[in-house]
Length: 158
Ligand code: SF4
Image (cartoon, rainbow, N blue to C red; front, side, top):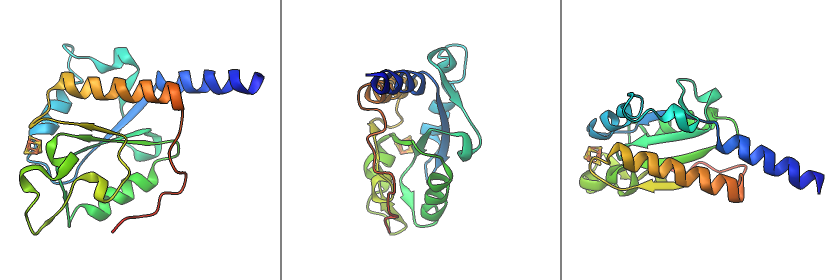
């Protein structure tokens, strides 16, 4: 009973204080500009407990924009592996979800899920800031219901 209460309190705190880091794995910059909008007074994601963080060592959520290029794949993995658990991955835009318009390029591996486990996919080219906020709220919902339901030791996908 007490363990359950502690777990619920922990999940509530986790849900209400998501620290987010952004990584561009090959984007055209369209989705990145939409992410920047989240910090403006108009969208102001900090009111939802979402803080943009520069260091992976302090981040809970990895926001990835763009398809994963061969050049960016190792960097993407490195950022993810530096983040402490529990951690979550959000694919922002069509390119990071599926490869998008770059899917058939020789230099592109595909969507982020070719390398990392993705928790939330946000469609759009580019995706609107409202869609990114909606995706992050869905992630908060999932955390409050399931907590950290991800595999602890996720093996690198090549
Ligand atoms: S989804 Fe569209 S805007 Fe976003 S990185 Fe791909 S091409 Fe650019």
